[in-house]
Amino acid sequence: MATLAAALAASAPLVLAGQATAGERGLFHLPGVDDFRVQKVQRAEREQEWPFTVDEGYLSCAWLLGKPTVYFTDDPGQDADLDEIRVVVVSTDPFDLLLGRFAGRGLIGTQESIETLIHKMAPLKTVGDRLCEQPRGTIVGPGEL
Image 1 (cartoon, rainbow, N blue to C red):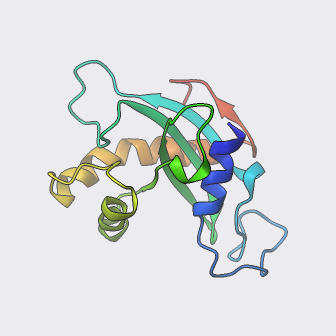
Image 2: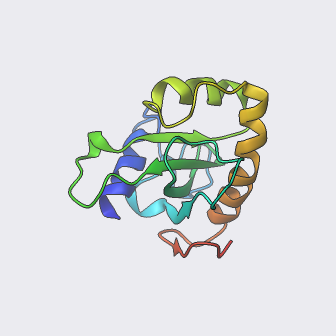
């Protein structure tokens, strides 16, 4: 789990490095490893609304630039290096989703329209936002939110 949190922290934009404020909800806060809340999620049997190319992974959230930012990562296994973990932002913003198709290294399917992808991402974004309301470092069990 520490490797996953480190990968997420590394994926956060570093544009404002060195300008972090004390409060995690501050505009210039950049999340560290201990700032993430994590929940394992998986595709339900026969689920048609799953936006990812893998059947399970981790939903996580941390505050970035003053707003909750939700991520989905695949599960590469215990011995994976940081560069083996694929991460995409879970969002309903079309720009974020277009970037996710390229930066996620195949984690989001490319056959779907952006409108369909927004529809499929919305419930996961909602759960991720609720996850961000939990204390820092929380690991939530499947289906708890």
